[in-house]
Length: 277
Image 1 (cartoon, rainbow, N blue to C red):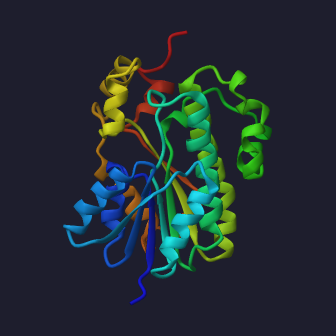
Image 2 (image 1 turned 120 degrees about the horizontal axis):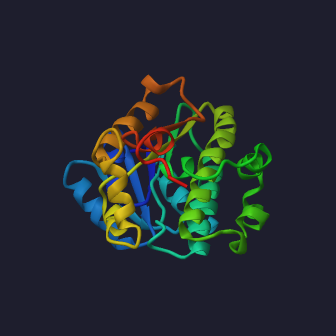
Image 3 (image 1 turned 120 degrees about the vertical axis):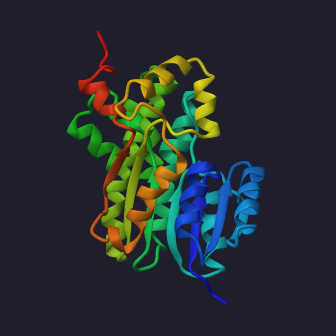
């Protein structure tokens, strides 16, 4: 029997939380570079009544992205994309962050956009980091939004010698994610589908715990201590937003980024997290 198909890339806590909200009654193909992660999430969800299939997927590879799309199409029309794949500044070097978080996301949105079903929807998970970096020019934003995917990493501003460190690479990647969502949402709209972005702050996940225990651990702990919410967030709080964006209640929302960071960005610009120099 044919089912609507959901593609989930990034087998982590946020991706699983979103899939549990929107994926019941559908076939969920779960892709992760580490097949063990995809298998673990699939097992948890299948034992809770979902229909999931794990698949090794590297979003930095167009061929790998096409493979997961083809697998999902075996079951039915692709009606949803949940992209929660990525690496953090403490997990990878500059080149890997740009190849996975920036280029990979751009290719994924492009390729799924070619086949997404009418009435379909997608969300990609970026980060508050894209909001806390020096402002880019309108021309630079345009380049991030519209440069052909295979030329993105050749942009002058994305060459490794022009990236200060892994945090800067991550910020540029997340800024690019938001701009690509805006541009791709226009193309998705031609198919009668919607695409949005969620920019979380500090969400407690294994990836975040790597950051807490990494070289910038004190920085992150200070961030959620001094944000208006006074705490980090949870994956289910991100899923609350994704459920709205991907449901009919969000039918007039496309090409948007929703910042969900407990007010950390507001505090960074106008509160106790504002840099002193």
